[in-house]
Structure formats: C-alpha cells, structure tokens
Length: 147
Image (cartoon, rainbow, N blue to C red; front, side, top):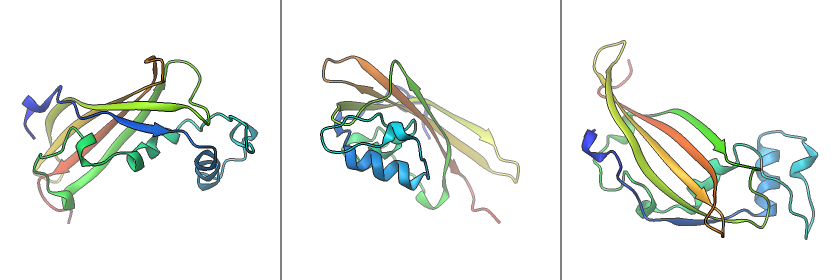
C-alpha cells in the first residue's frame, strides 16, 4: 500500500443509533447489562463496541480505501479500538461519521513476505457537530497466502 494514501478522507455517512439495533447488538454479544435495555420511547446507551456496526451504514464511497487495489483474499482485521469523548451514543442519536487513512506502513512477516498495514480512523459527530467518539481500525494485507 502506498504511504501517500495517508490523510485520504472518504465521504461522510449518517448513522442512526436505533433502539432495536442496540438491543440486538447487546444480545449478539451476550450482554445482560440493563443499561442497554429499553422499550419504545427509551434512550438506552449503546454498548462500547456498538460503533463497529457503522459498516452497515457505509457504502463504498464512505471508505478511504475505495479505489485502492487490494487482494481481499489476503486481508486480515488486525485491531479495533474505540475512544469516547463523553458518554457513548444513545438510542435516537444521529451521528455523522467520516473515515480517513491515518497511517500506512509495511512490516516483514514471520513466515516471509511483507505485510502492509493501513490504520483508519472514523470520527463520529453528533447533530451539534461535537466529536462523540473515534474508531481506529488496523487492516493488514499479507503478501502471500498462509500455509
């Protein structure tokens, strides 16, 4: 991957934090935390990793890697972390996300061949434009198939 991609930003996307999706996410992760439960009209808080579901709100134009040639058979999800700049989003919040490539680098693999890393950051802002959370992900493209 080309280091000149650093700083490349994608088109913004809108994500509605839905009550039903918070409940589904909590159940899928086997959480029994009552803070994630609620009924119609309630605004429960979203689980800490809920923003991983932002991918369902994004099309290809929302990825800073759009148009970059990658061998998707050799892609690994290396890491994901979330930073909150206040309380996590609640049901009913409408967030605007913007993703960018923060860092591109290469390392030698243990079994030979290079590994290309791309660290992406997605910033989530509320309706007032305030930074609510950031998601940082690391994608790895291996140069050869695992044996």
